Image (spheres, rainbow, N blue to C red):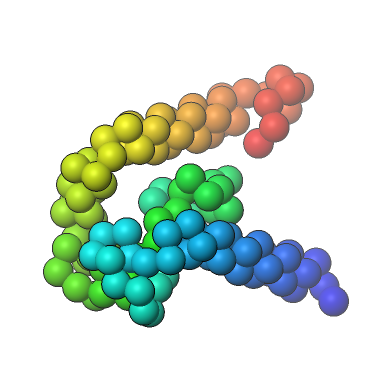
Length: 121
């Protein structure tokens, strides 16, 4: 098996474990309370913050409607979804903002440092 396939296989395995952990935390949609068609949603997008892809604090259990399709869903109405999170737990939103800042600071250090600086990029 080539290296890319092996990495993808390992990432998929970790994705499955992460998803199971997010579902087991609440066993229902954390927005509407439904108990069927549950999805695990990344609060900080995995494409923008790959280092947080498998962190449990970066996940919320949502039904398919609240995750992708319904009015006010995380993907259709991200501003509305953030408003929901603010009402639910402002400290969680503050924490997510701080984690995003840390990620950006690390990226800036990588862009401005030379290879001998000791910063792992």
